[in-house]
Length: 306
Image 1 (tube, rainbow, N blue to C red):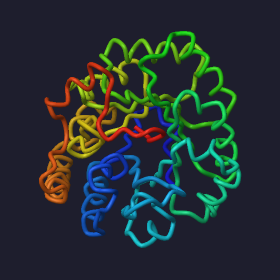
Image 2: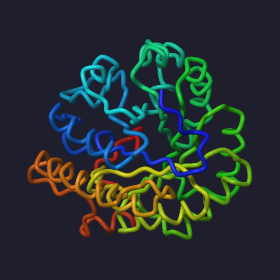
Image 3: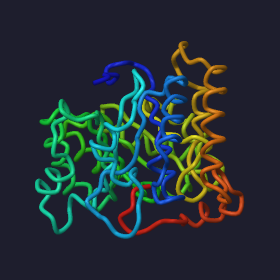
């Protein structure tokens, strides 16, 4: 298992297939996945979040909707890449008891799984009930991150209360997501400061690009001390998409980041992804800018990760 949690540097998480899967039902070909993985290794990305891990099976969905251990083992994962998956928090607080859901989602301990990092995405009202999953996963050797969604509209006291809940659990990173792409850099900085009054561990940010500010918000978060950042190739993701991996890397704190090598490798992956999407346009779309202004995101369904 690759360990990066103790470095005093940024951790770059590329979640192209997880967030970008909303465009094509998470149905990516093995050839495309391997081309992408090679590009991510060349770009020195830390973590590749290959998709969701879910118990739901409604309609056709590709392998990256489930991202099982068996599927990941069928891939050639380049050396140096940490493999992650995401779970929707609503699956941990629903009708299926949490421990049963976790046992079905993660039948293998981390030592026997190709997955290193598990991230749980949940809404504010699900957070407290979902938190015990952190302990269960940590006891089985996984690195664990929590992504809090739709935090932009929360008050200072609400954010601080969430941070107080989080610090009772051994998670490796606490994220907040600008789910509707409605934040400004100053708003992102304010939320980080509120979290920081109670939460002293690593923080992360996941941005959306409704207002064209995904990269600006990510860079401001880095200035405010956030050490985990998400991005996707070409910004491919729900609605207008996310911060672009090919942009976020330009502010990496490590001198080892090789921009020239990255540009060539990532460019090949970006072209392949755009071809795979067909007529769909990936990345920021000015026609979707009003969605950020009124806090609405296309493809948004109740309980979905953002």
